[in-house]
Image 1: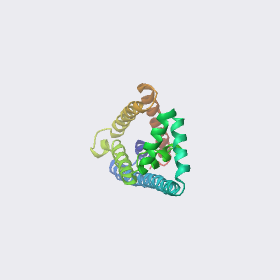
Image 2 (image 1 turned 45 degrees about the vertical axis):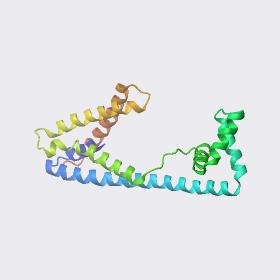
Image 3 (image 1 turned 135 degrees about the vertical axis):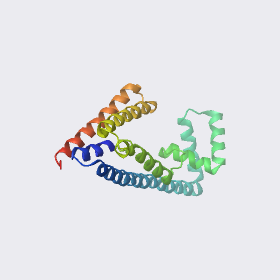
Image 4 (image 1 turned 120 degrees about the vertical axis):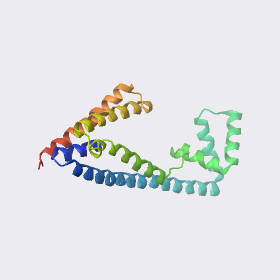
Length: 200
């Protein structure tokens, strides 16, 4: 909620150029912090998958028949039976990579997508940077009544993000848009209120 930072500094009665400097510093620092946290989390997930993969590789090497029975059990839970189940079990266990992938999914609930820490961190940082620049633009452009323009543009952005988010949820677009706008608006109001306590 980068507009809350702008509200905080604006509420404190700072000059526009100070708002821009503090806003940029905050966007870069917070963006890097979020990206670093994302990188660490995704890397930990990838390392855990690699650890489990090695365990399954060792089990397949040392206990192939037991692991084959596990494959058969996993496939039977998916609805396969009889001759089809036998064929599917044979097909899976003939390829070690497919065998391990099925075990990761069926036994541990891990998907087949390999996590990419650097890509995830870069995406987080760029998204944070773009979103954080929106409330600062009116101040950077020297617009008249920059705070009001920033507030309206930011709320419109919250609304658009909420509407777009509905593509990945069961909520109607308008409900998702309103919820996101309310959350962002409340955060901005709180930040502005805190800023007024330090008015200079």
